[in-house]
Length: 449
Image (cartoon, rainbow, N blue to C red; front, top):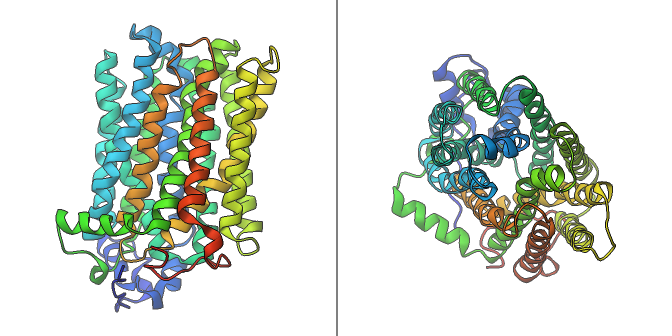
C-alpha cells in the first residue's frame, strides 16, 4: 500500500497547549513527522491520562457490571444466557461501531467523532440504568457499545499519529498500565455499589464517568491528524482502504491472532461471575477481589513488556511466548474443570486464570503495535479493523461459555483453549515472523503480502 504523504504544517508548538477549541483543532497542523516530538511534549501527561481513560471505557463498561450479573438475572426474571447477551450486545456494538468511527476519524480528524460518540455513550448508559426489561437493557447496551467504540478506536489512532516503532509499543504498554487500573478497580467498585444500591446504580456511576471523560476530551485533547493527512473520500474509499489493509497477510495475521487472544480473555470475563460465585460459592466481593488480582497480573506483565522487553527482545518473540503461556494455562484449566485432577478447589482454578490473564500483558499490546506498524496512511481504519475483529470474535465466544448451563466451568475452558490454539495458528501461519527482520519490525508498508 502506498503511504500518503505527511505534511509538516505551519502551526507552532504554542498553539497546542492553548485552552481554546480553535487551538486544539489547530494542533493538527503540527502532526507531521518533523513535529511529532513537539506535539508529544506539548500534549503532555494529561493527554496520556485521557487516552488511558478512553481505552479504559470497555473494561469499565463490562467489569463494573460483572458482580451484578446474578442479581440482574433475578431482578429482570430472565435466564442467565439472556443476561449474558447484555455483554454480547455491548461487545457487538463496540465491534460494529469501530468500523464506522475509524474511517470517520481518518476523514474528519479525531476530536469531532470522539466527542459525538461520548455524548451518545452518556445518553445510552443513563437509559440502561432505567431499563425495566432484559430486552430493553440489551438494546441500550448495544447502543452503549456502538457509541463507546469511538473511545477505543480513536485512542489507538491518536497513538499511531504520534508514535512509530518501538516507541509505539512502549506507549501501548503505558496505556495498558493506565487502562489496566480499570479492570482492577471496576469490579471492586461494582461490588461496593451493590452494597449501597442495586445493579442500576452501577450504570449511574458509569454515566458520571462518561460525563467527566467527555469534559476532559472537550477541554484538553488536541487534534492529532493534520488536515492534509485526512481522507476526503466517502464510504467507497473507506472500504477500499480496509480491503487494502486486509490484503496485507501479516497485518491480518496480527489482527486475527489478537482477536482470538481477546476472545479467550472475554470468555473469562463472561463466565467468571457464574463460575466463581455460583459454582465455587464465592461472594460478589470475593469475586471482585480475585478479578482485581488477575488484572494486576495483566498490568504487571504489560509493564515488564514495555519497560524491560521492548527494545531488547523482538516484539514477535514476546508475543509468541505470551500466546504459548495462554495456551498452556487454558489447557490446565480444561484439565482441572473436567475433573482430570479430581475435585479441585477455587484456589487452583483461580491460579490458572491468573496465569492466563497475566500472559495477556504480552499478547494484547504487541499485537496492536505490530499490526499498526504496518500502516501509517489510515490509522483510524486500521485501528477499527483491529478492534472490530477482537470484539466480534469475543462476542461470538461469550454465549458459548454458558452453553452447558451455570453448573460447570468446562465450556469456559474449552472456549479459551480453542481461541488460544487459533491465535497461535494465525501467528505461525500468517505472520511468519521467522521470515522477516524482527529486530524493530518497522517494515515498509506492502512487505510480505
